[in-house]
Amino acid sequence: MRYVVAIVIAAAVALVATLTVSAPLALFVVSRFSFESPDQVSNLHDAVYLGTSALALAAGWAIGWLVGARFEPGEDPG
Image (tube, rainbow, N blue to C red; front, side, top):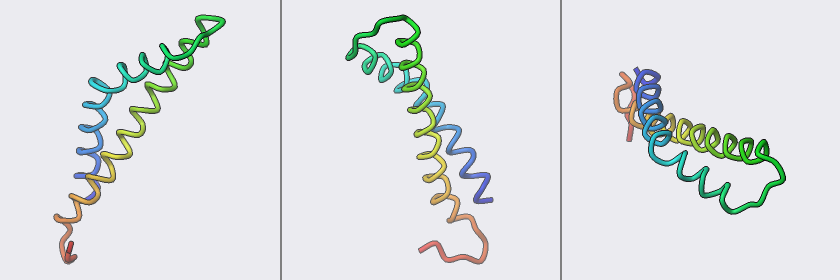
């Protein structure tokens, strides 16, 4: 059950972060630099966007793992 809770919460946190945080953060980071080609702009934008989403997924998994511990039979969560 712990894995299911962690997966559901990780997906929810990643979705919320992707829809609300990733794009504005990527645009903010890209606006701080000057580039020689549009490919460089796209590469940095993609890296920041995906990195933010991946960090949100990892944070959601950690939160879900801790919350899921409450549902583990036979373990005392705290």
